[in-house]
Image (cartoon, rainbow, N blue to C red):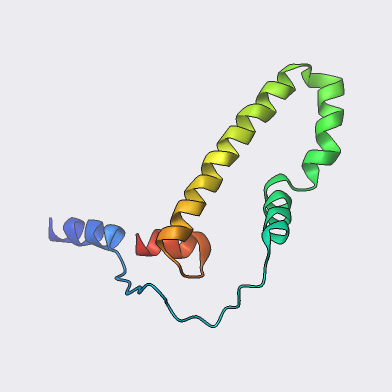
Length: 103
């Protein structure tokens, strides 16, 4: 039973983090709203969406494609809101790795 308990503890451990209001960082804030929006759209949508979605909708899918894109947009919005919440809580670089390791 001791090994199982240690294994569960290792899986659920958290890294302590000392964050003050003004945490010192070597990173410069040089991106504006347009830059961040363009990066988000590029990372979320990708190139394949523009190339293949028209062909698939025209040949195979039909009107259900619009509904599936709406569902995907809602799911992406929830994901973006989660990342925004994480970024506000943990002001460190490292993306999903830092968020999952600290919280």
